[in-house]
Length: 258
Image (tube, rainbow, N blue to C red; front, top):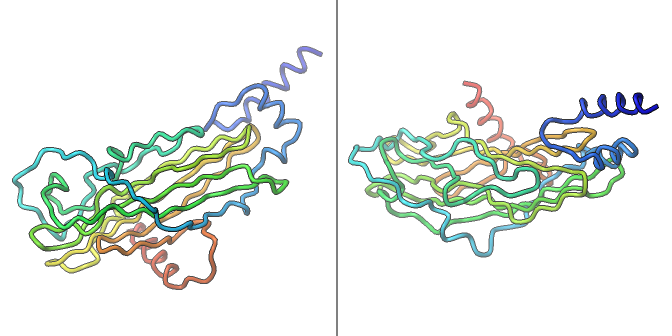
């Protein structure tokens, strides 16, 4: 009997998702009631709460060394992070002072070489998920931060300090949440003119919800411009019939395939 139980436990352990480590108590509870530890993928949704009341003033990172290279205004690059962790196993790990993306002219060494930066802006969202019984098991509240309007000698509108800050994390016992950000190089483009560029960026927010039974994952996609345009273009956002966003999402998808 002891040997059979050992073999059964070994087989169950082998099936556990690798994204998180689970305790023996979590494994036993999940095996007794799988529905309680299975995310209903159709229940996952993101609701826009609204703009941040007091966006962080320190969202722009500390100034690196300045350079003397003449910038190429219509060639826009990310001098910051491309991929970074936001939440690891229910714990926030993001540091908005150092983990962020930019869309700046090629040749610029620092956002501080530019002028016209506006105060940081933040938009707050809430991601929720339910289990197979319909009980809420995940609530994540976060804000998408960005600083817009930067120009070089009066030309262009660029982005810096683009990041995601977790504000609230609630996970039912036995559920493990991890979230990361990804800014593909191909998504950083100039949507203005060659003489007066407008930087655009399409950051992606990916999440993994894991239990001892199953792993669920998904992502949301945002579209930002240096002149202040900001939209959700992909993900389980709770809303109906937005043709403009659908058109942008299709255009972005085609760009990323090039």
